[in-house]
Image (cartoon, rainbow, N blue to C red; front, side, top):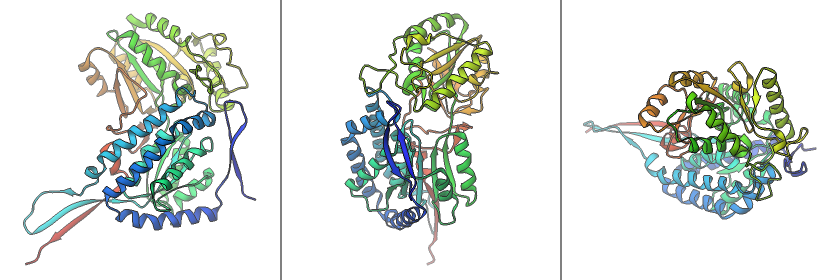
Length: 464
């Protein structure tokens, strides 16, 4: 009997989707189909790939209202915000189609008498995209669309929490006219993913977004064949509020960075360092703003804070908060302000902690929820030292009126992306990358195509 996976909606705890997990025979068939399709797709002119992928994007966007509602039921984001993910999907996808022909063109290396010399960007073959549930369209589009544009076939595996997203991609691909096998989805177990990466006839590249431990599993599997892996992993992203910051803007932006998507974002704000002269005012303003959030059923348009993805996730964060309090931390948010917050459910009140230090897990380990620790700092050097005191390095932010100071600080902070006066956002023209335990590789931008192709040199001597 085929195994099944259940998607339990955090909205009400009911089974929202039930799907069969692909059998080994079905995985074999999908891989053969993708391999055959990749050969033809790689020979398709880039302009034609752009045309067909644009049609795929159009098909997804045409369904955005339905897809947004499905997102809310699968992973719990408030319905008032779910459409934003589809807007972000469209922005990233259209940017990559817009630069594809130029970015994938042959690279000329200069004239040399008697020789024709170029470097081609050759597709890798079959790309496996393993996408998480927290931003299932936004994380997957970073790899799916560029991989297709680069001439690769794509096998897409989404989290068991958001299986409909993978299905909607392939439906859009069919509508767009993609040949069967160019874009396919599979519902897989973790073990089957590792096997698909490590097997001798497996995929040629894997783009993985998920936990650090999941990334290590992928890395071990990929090492068996020396194939490359793009890994976007965890985060404990910091922000620094300097004394010259526009305080109202910093508060508005950072509270949103803590609470958006119920804090379930690898690049959400989890550590805030505030200059001593504005520390008390920052805390007062942040607490005032957090109190305005409404926690509840995410299908209600008035709700601004939904549940975590599952009760176990909320329990993990509650345990982390309890441990921090026992070590001396103090919460500024009274849970009674959020009546829906209740132990034994995925509904969790947000929290800002003070009296924290870097000996506490809440300031060192990933917290996938609406929680941040806030510390006072004495100067820029103090802030940089604390921001760098982490095994993660995905994004970091500074809030200041001084552009030159922001540039100087950014050159010292160990991170993949450095923001000034913003956070928790992604510009598709810029390389999306992390360091340390936040991963390796790159997606989006012109550089993203380099990870989805290999260089092939043509060194042609003319003999007269």
